Amino acid sequence: MTPSPQATVPPQARPPDEQHSEALLLTLLRDALLLLGVRAELRDNDSALMIVRPGVGMPVWVFVGYGGAYFSWQSAEKRHPTSDLKGAAQILAAYVGQ
Image 1 (cartoon, rainbow, N blue to C red):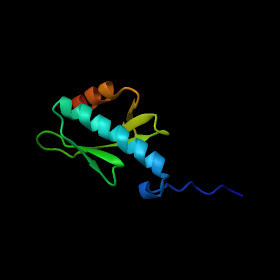
Image 2 (spheres, rainbow, N blue to C red):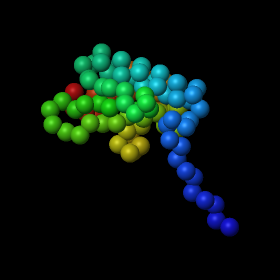
Image 3 (cartoon, helix red, strand yellow):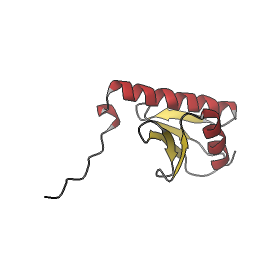
Image 4 (cartoon, one colour):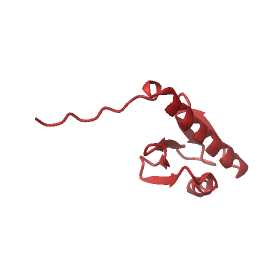
């Protein structure tokens, strides 16, 4: 018997403490980005951070993934440890061209 594919759990169905810690990490990252002059907004029930690119371009969506260990973006091809907020903010600022 083949195992069934794992279903993704929608953000609103996650345990409240997991939602809270992800939202806190994204809030702290948003604040670190703002210090660098990068505009970012919490979106989707505080489960994602949207970074607006200066000028023209699609926004960058940042999520907390890998069990809370990493910020991830670009379909999880890019990531940075959540334990390094300042470094994550600097990398994302460079990534969006600011």
